[in-house]
Length: 252
Image (tube, rainbow, N blue to C red; front, side, top):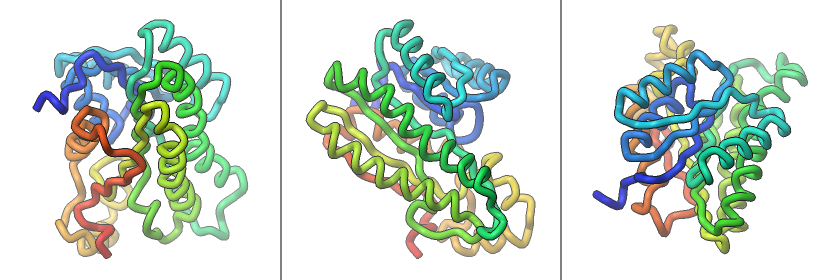
């Protein structure tokens, strides 16, 4: 079990203020990592920090707009100056609006691509420079089952998540010589704010449940084991991979 410990590791988690990001941050803290929790909502980040503390962990929070390249660079430099390094990066921040393609405005398209895709590039680049310099690092990008499959009225979301899977492979290839591993987690439907619309609509919920072999949405804490595996020494020879955590939804 020592293979799964994150003791003395510094782990940056974006989108840590709620949902899967909060669950992963708390789980990684419980495994020994100091968490650098990133998000836009300061109050929600403080709540995450309280839960990490209650679980016996430690954290530092940064309220940051990940679509702003200057803000990202400043945040990463400040975190490294304060903590010494970033060992693990979990790129989790994302949004999932639903809209007919004919109704998507250019501004809305750019908002989704900036948040889901460009932010991953900006944070990975900023943290990657430090990881390359110390020749060690671990990056985990959170994509989606819809990076592989299609979803109705979600063109911008599907496109952004498919890009994350390919970006993870390209980074894994480029940065392997620097002992940096890059992997991807593709979640299915989980009980989070992001899927609130699907959960509220009884008709939509039943439709989705019937397509999920395990016949339920996942619980946020059920992603923790996967992120611990990929962020720890248990997966030392794993890079460029995408793990689907979806109750079997992607089997279809």
